[in-house]
Image 1 (cartoon, rainbow, N blue to C red):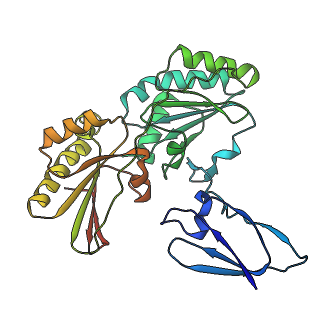
Image 2 (cartoon, rainbow, N blue to C red):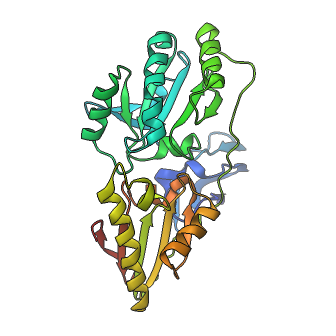
Image 3 (cartoon, rainbow, N blue to C red):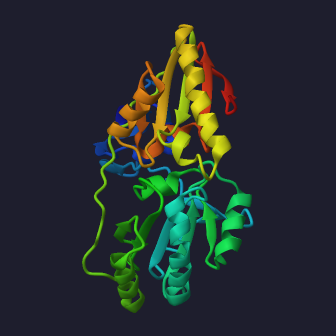
Length: 328
């Protein structure tokens, strides 16, 4: 009896139920047994019924990719795909503590009043150092009438290559991204006007902001490890709008500096939001940081660890998470 081996080229962390990243192969076989071979050496066997001599078997392990979801004001989970393909979509990523976001809110509301019947407006709070009460206050302050959502997982922002607030993404009726921007300017207005006419724009205007590759987070099996999730700007940018949070960011870095002096393995992961290597170096110099500091490009580790506020300190012992600290 022959055996067919389908080798799935996956991330080591991927399980069979999340195999959307795997490549798929098609092979010929004469067999009644099919084995799936994963990197970690485990196998799973399935029975095939051989109806003819030579059988072409096409295996597609494409466990459904988790849909991009948002939470609306009532707490209902909404799939973003439910808005796509029907008419153009305007995604605006924002935060309540973001000064330019607040400055742009009147423009956003005016655009909604002008084009809301022809373009689907989706206001997306990025859920970093924010809460429902703060969002409600902004809604009332600017008399916002478009649908408001929260990206609790951060996956919608990541999918659309979000780099910093405010961030505009326009998607045409064919579900193609045709505009990205941070300013409420003429290019944005012109694209909205064109989209409102026929749902399409001939020439896309994309920012081309390239993300780097995030350094992996390595947790040792033995000993203690501390990982601080923060932002290079939170101690000064939030000083006016969120002074208590700004102070916590300062105290958090001072705290991990002390942990490092005690011989504990410490690492700092900073959000990619409005951050580049020069900002990282300024941060290192300001706080006399001696431990590794790296940008979490794509906010992969923020998402993976459920980090929705900065600063957040994760403490590990012998490879296991033992505590999470947000107050210092």
